[in-house]
Structures are given as C-alpha cells and as structure tokens.
Image 1 (cartoon, one colour):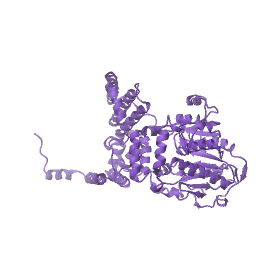
Image 2 (cartoon, rainbow, N blue to C red; image 1 turned 60 degrees about the vertical axis):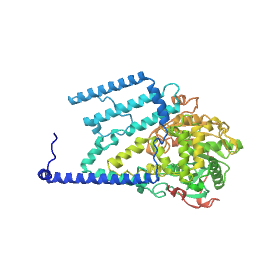
Image 3 (cartoon, helix red, strand yellow; image 1 turned 180 degrees about the vertical axis):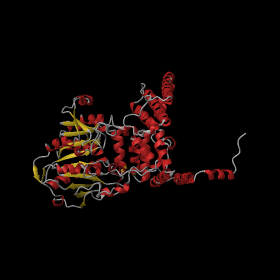
Image 4 (spheres, rainbow, N blue to C red; image 1 turned 90 degrees about the vertical axis):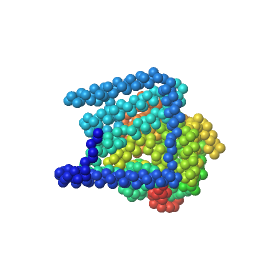
Length: 612
C-alpha cells in the first residue's frame, strides 16, 4: 500500500508554518527553475524546427571515427585475456578507492588514489577534494576514464593497426571521456551547485538564456561564446599599430607600418600571416604586439591582411595564393622600399605557402627572398598535429559537400569547431560550465576575440591544402607540383630561422624539425615554451616561458633537444639578433605615406573588418 498524497489544504497549512524568508526563497527557486526550463525548451524547440527545415544537419559520426573504433574493438574482442586483465586492474583500483573512502569516513586523511593530470583545471575548486561525495565522484571518473583510454590505447597498439588509426581512436576516446566528466553536469559539479543555491536558481536562468542566445547565434547549432565580443574593436583596442594599406589585390591588403626609430635596416621585413584567421594575431594589444616591437627594433615591417573570401573567390587556388600572395606582395614591398630583396616570415599555413614559394623561386632562379623565418610552420606532415586525425577520405568528402552547399567556401564556423575540438576541455567544456551551468558571461580576452574572428576558406585552396599536405605529405616527398614546377626544398639555400613551440598541438616541434631538415641552406632551429599561439606571441616584457637554442642541426630532434641550452623569457631578442645580421645597413626611416605606392587607407585596413 502506498500513502495517499496529502490534500492541498494540508500542504498549504504546512507551508504556512515555514518561515516567511524560507517560503520566499522556495518560491523564487521554483519560479527560476520554471523559467530556466521554459527558456531551454524554447531554444531546443527552435533548434529542432531548424533541423526539420533542413537549415542545419546533424551527423551520427561527423568525424568518421566509427571504422577505426570498430577495428580496435574487434581486436579487443579477439583478446579476452587482455580484457580480463584490464577489468581486474580496474576492480583493484576501485577497491583501493573504496578503502580510501572508508578511511576518510573513519576520520583519517588518506592520499587520493588518483589525481588529475598536470594542467587539468576542471577540478581545481577545493570542494572537489574537501567534500567527500564530490571527491569520490572525481576519483571514480578519473579511474574509469584513465582505464578506458588505456585499454583502447593498448588495443590500438597491437601489430597491424595503422599508426594514424591508433591516433584517431585514442583522440576520439579522449574526447568522449572528457565529455562525460562530472564537472560538465549541474548535479555533480559542486561549484555550479553552490552558485545555484546562493542565487536561488538565478544562475541557471542566466545559463539557459546564454544557451538560447548561443543557439540563436549559431542558427540552430550551438556556438559557445568564449569571450565578450563587444569589448573589442579592430583598429581601436586591437590591431591599432599605426600604418597604411599601400596595396591591395583580390586576396590581400598589404600593410606598411609606421617606423618607431629614426633609422631602419635597409632590407624590409614582410610577414605572411595565416589566412585561416585574421592577421592581427601579430598586432593584438600594444603591450604584446609583435609588429610594434619589430618597428622598435629598427625594421620596416609589412604584413599581409588576407581577404575573407566568399563564393566569388571559390576558385582561388594554392597557386593563386603563391602568385597573388607571396610573389605580388614581395614585388610591391621591393618597389615601395627601393630594394631588390626582402626578408620574409611565414606563420603556420602562411609558412607552408612561403616554403612552397621558396622552392618554386629556387627552380626559377629567383633570389628576392634574402632570408626566411617560419613561425609554427610545417613542411613535413608525417608527424603533423591532431588536425591530421580528421583528414580521411570520408571526412574530405563530407567537407567538400559542406563547401558546395555554402556556395564554394568553407564556413568559418566549421574551422572554428574543428580547432576547438582539438582542445575541448579548454575551448568547449570550460565555457559550457561557465556560461550555462554557472550562468556567467565569458571574460574579455583579446586572444579569444581573435580566435573567434574566423575567416572563410575558398574551396580550391582549402581542399588542395588538406589533401596534398595533411593527407599525402607531398611537399616533403618531392611530389608537389605548382605552376608546372616540381618543388624541391633542398634547392632553397637562403638562410632559414625556424621557430617551434614545445607544447604546440597543431604544429608539433617534432614535425617542425622534420621540415627544418628539408632545406638546402643554413638553418637555425629554436624551440620556445608554451603552444601554437603563446609560444609565438611572447613579448619580452612579459617575462614568461623560456626558449631553447642549439647551433647544431643533428639527425633527430631528440639529439637537438639533448644538446640545447635553455634560456629564460622570450625568444624574440634571439631572432632579432639573427634577423639584423641579414637586414643590411641602417638607412633613414621610411614613411608609409611617402613611398611610390600611394596609401589606400589607414591600417588595419578594410579586409580585416569583414566578419563571417
């Protein structure tokens, strides 16, 4: 027999006995829960309608990892002894955890059975360790996720498994286990629960309002806000170094920056930035601007601001970016400065393009590039970063269909989603918790503003890059052809400076080193601390990180590391000393407004203002 529900009159009588403050708090909490539920339901209903109308489409396996998982799981099934040992190990670890809990209940303070990995910020709040319930949740999750990732890694390491298949399975299993972290759910996150109680549910209302706004912004697909975009304006508080746009064509604007010294080195410096993002990564704020610092060192600095292409530029190819990009821009810089050669920098994909152009120029006998510097750039993609895990035939086919549906260009959101997934805990789940579970607005951060200011990709250019570099690794093999010329980096004899970063997940230092070994002339290889962005953009005044140098270029990167010398702080002064030696005598500073090229507009120009 079950007890009958109390009559409404009795419930009201009982509520009347509750102190007024508590009644008001309960009423407010109840109302906020209802508001949060209604907001979330409305947003989800709108997203569902968009799905039904075909405005957005979901894929059951967008990264095409199922075949790789099937192969690995099949190997697990064929090795029952491996699974038995793994299960026994997991049970043993859980026994240790239960014993740990029992000791804690008895008033002892035992050491945890498992702790988060170094750099894992999900469990930083003291409640994750001080509150027994949440400590058990945390340790149970870490035990299970570590076990799952270890089992899959062991199975993928079996003989006969393709190394790329192994990496793909390990990567996506990590993504899956990260998604199920207790920190990502309101009921199991002590920080979010505390905020919920203290605000009487208002945090959840704000969170669902943020959720609805992000769904609306993504037109039915969740587009998580990473920073307050309203706090930054290009040309006002980012990309504000003075200068002029002195030339433009279909794919770029050429910016010449105003000098900061009375004299400058004769040979100018031209920086080819990545076209996947906007150019102002090299000119964020005045206190971390690479452009500003370089002008203060006495260099005449030019930067390419690439167009944000639409369907009218869909046919622009990698070869077009070489001719209209590196060739045309370098020609205009030489004309503006009255010189017959320049020093060039290529950042990330801009460096890959510069490498190909150097090989093309070498085949043609052209020597306009006096020296070349590469920031986080790859030429050999055999050990490329995690982006290589996405480049399968099936994924490329889906990508091409998406590009065609958009009108001949890859939408900027697609690239953003891909790069965010490479660091999901930092770039997805941390903001999921902050924005939705905590109901907070993301903090203003110039680097994340730049990261969100993505550009579109022309079909011909982007598919060529993914297929011939990431998938086929054609440049390092000597198989890549541009303009009827087979590209051979051994014919490039100009001095080369190669920057890499120790923790770079997009251009790993091992991959960058393989590329450095391909050139035929003198190469200086340097490794900085941090990653793909912070490892490059590290102003000396910040006194952050470190860098390693080694004058030798031995056969392997491990040999290079073992013989390298560590230095505190930024690597920029080391590079500047190298660059000054390649930049000629001092001449009067060059005013961008007084050269042969007539200024079109003030820096940062209009191309960078085009939002996707």
